[in-house]
Image (cartoon, rainbow, N blue to C red; front, side, top):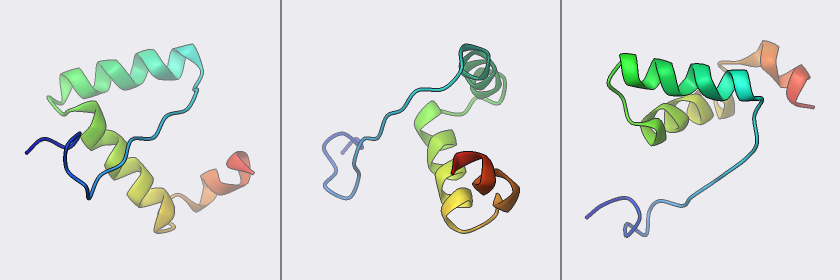
Length: 59
């Protein structure tokens, strides 16, 4: 079953600056990682407090 049909997964979206978007896509490609996997890792790190310095920018 793919993640779209898996009831344990939900889709999120947002807007980011164009340059960050380009960097993200490039890094995902170069590391051979799916964008959804990279987002899951980033969100998990942020939620778990691993990105404390970024919390102030997001406020």
